[in-house]
Amino acid sequence: MSKNNPARPKMTKDTIPENFTLPLALVDALPVLFFGGSMILIGLLFGSPLFIAGAALCFWAGAAKVLWKIIVVTKKKNIWWMFLQMRIVMPVGFALMLLAVIINRNAINLNAVFAAVVSFPSVIFFGIGVSGMVLMAVFAAKLDPADLRSNWIEQLTNTIAQAAIFIGILLLF
Image (cartoon, rainbow, N blue to C red):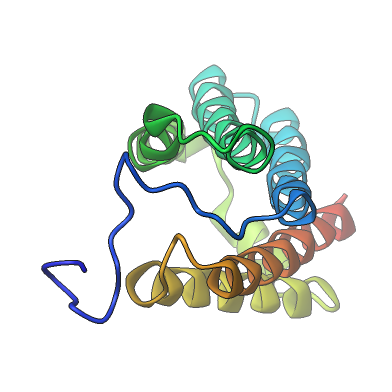
C-alpha cells in the first residue's frame, strides 16, 4: 500500500501487473499517436526547434510507456526504467515546449490563437480535451496503476481527450 494513500497500492520495480492485456497495451498507443499528430501540426505552424524537441520528448515518453505495457503483457517482465521514465521525460518535454512559447511569445498572436480555439466547432473539441486532461490528473492521484480496470478508464479517457484535441487542431487548419 502507498504511504500517502493507504487505499491505493503502489507500483514498484517488483510489481508485474498480472491482468494487463495486449488490447490494453495497443489502445495505450492511440493517445500517443493523437498527441504526436497534434504536435506535428502545432510544430509546423509554430516552427520552434525547442518546441519540436519538447514535443518529441513527450511523444518518446508515451511510446516507451506503451512498449513497457507490451513487454509486461508478452514477457511478464517489468522494465522499471520504462515505467518511471514518463514521470521524468514528459515533464521535461512539456517544460521545453512551454519555454519555447515564452521565448517566442512576441511571434505569437495570442488574440488570433484565442479566437481560433474558441471558434465553433473547435471549442467543443478543445473543451472535451481539457476536461479529459483534468480527469487524467484526478486519475493519476486516485487510481491504482497496476489495476486493469483503472488502466482501461485512464486509457479510454486519454484517447478521447487526445483525439478531441487533435480534431480541434485539425479544424483550425
